[in-house]
Image 1 (cartoon, rainbow, N blue to C red):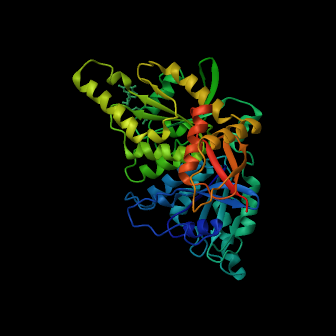
Image 2: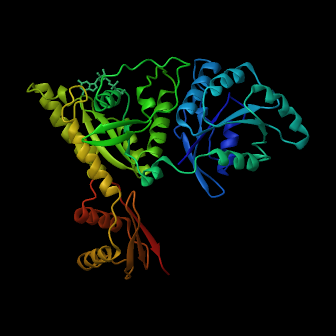
Image 3: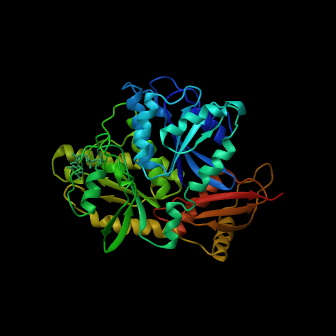
Length: 438
Ligand code: GDP
């Protein structure tokens, strides 16, 4: 989905606007100061267009001062979003902080909309006029609280929002799109450098050197691949507060653009909550998944300590990653380059299965056999029947079952399991939905 980001200094009404666009009141809850929001992107819709809405307000509690945190918000929006909504409080007018943001926004070639908020009455519209001076074009007067002007503004925004998502572009051609994900220091940047075939110097991103997101096309295994959002990987974020927010925002937006995710895990460290959360985001996104266990060079020694770590890792994988046992696992060393070539077949297999379509006839034969062998358990003397099934879509494979009643969750899991046993579906999530016919 295209990404629309909302930036602006505190109290201009960004969260109000998010709520207004999402059409619900409770979308953004009040934060405890110092705690960044968990949720950073929301699925939004306007007319028939779907997009991902990002509220950069999660940065506001940075101890670094308003200017720094607003600058960080803007840089992130510039890096990750397709369209930027810059919200100004028209009642207050442009402040020095606003001017600071404007300087940053002027550097991007992406569409920027200047939103003059708190114009609660038509007679106030003149108050937006001085904002022309910011040099960002026409101010769009709105009242986020009352909804005035929001529809017109969204119409204008949608006109500038790319219609085709990066993922859809593949269907027109071009290399497959890969996101490299993982918590900091697992070796994403090293992996990218090795894959790109050269050791690149990663420069510290000083404010002012922000660039547009760079997708890098890399040749691997005789094929071209697009690594998405590599600017985010190369960029070294030295912020203490807000770093988590940045990381999950980066993960979500990279997933929007990718077809397959490589989640990099550092084998020298215990598998953490954060690793699991990143995998969770991939599952939610419905993208294909490959797990890359990196820094294997550190464990490839006969010493006792390493042997124990290896054994412990196996147990961790069994325990913490059982739900993604279908994802191909490759043991690599981004540092030495060892076994990096194993990544390609894993990616290919994951994508092939992600794209895979099971013909309806075959799928129904599978269902018939499965039901004959393992009928749904009786429930109150009755038994829901599966009338018919079909694969409704690919990317990821999504099946629909037409039934005479709700199937038990356990039975649905059983169907999923059997589908995987029969068709493997290595590397892709699969979805089984139900339609109950009365
Ligand atoms: P990123 O934050 O995920 O991009 O991680 P980096 O690529 O910057 O790597 C973090 C640190 O781990 C650096 O010091 C790397 O040199 C080191 N590193 C990355 N890959 C490997 C590896 O395969 N083996 C070893 N021993 N160190 C690695």
